[in-house]
Amino acid sequence: MYYKEFALNEEGSLEGARLTVFIQEPSTELYISKRPLVLLCPGGGYEWTSDREAEPLAFAFMAKGFNTAILRYSCKPAKYPTALLELGRAMLIVREHAAEWEVDPEAIIVQGASAGGHLAASYSCFWREDFLSEKLLGEATDAAKEKLRPNGLLLCYPVITSGEYAHRGSFDALVGKEDKKLLEKVSLEKQVSDAVPRTFIWHTFTDGSVPVENSLLFASALKAHNINTELHIFCEGGHGLSLANEITESPSRKEIVPSCQPWIDLAATWLGSYFKK
Image 1 (cartoon, rainbow, N blue to C red):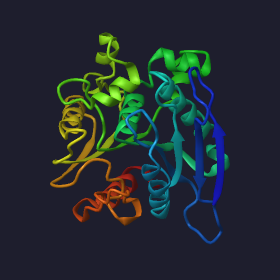
Image 2 (image 1 turned 90 degrees about the horizontal axis):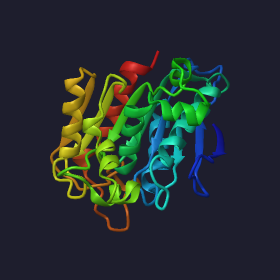
Image 3 (image 1 turned 45 degrees about the vertical axis):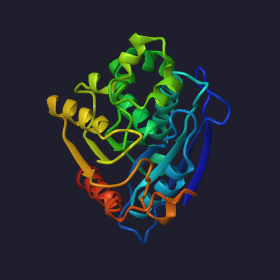
């Protein structure tokens, strides 16, 4: 396995912002050469990035045949769009090294959990906007923007809306309470366009922190734009389940939910259907 860290220093970045890549090295004993890469954005309410949604998820996806990378993005007191710029830089790093790492450059999937899901979904909505390519590449041409394009989006119990069903803490940390125009912009059910790639989403019906309506609103917006989407709503389980098993159980011991554990297999099947050659 190839492992490397890249420090990130975008406008507003805090110390410790970094991208960590885990690459399954090619072997003459293996038929598979180029692999898709899942770029993970852990949750944490835009106040930290969760360890439970970082390496354990990365290694779970690696075990299913995917390369992975973890973005430890800047959180509070960093504000929008710092984390978005860091995710864009992470995408550029992966694409620039795709040949070296045997990554399929047309199979880079952005994954996010909770507030990390908001970041991943924000990027999938906004990657084509001029300000991102101008800040990251110095130009806003179609060719520049194409380097930033995500090929897929994978969301785990994501924060989406700043409206009635908002996780207020995430939006307070990301943009504050005063800028109503920006709060509207980062309410992602209102920002879906044909720029968003095919999407996989899962949530629990009983999530008490980030209501399931977040995923339902986003999925409805995706359907309205005819964006291919797979949505799973599990009947039980709280927020922040990660793998929903003992590997990612926290000291509170509330995250083992057997009925939710199949999500990683469902996601791997979805990924394999569209991104494995």
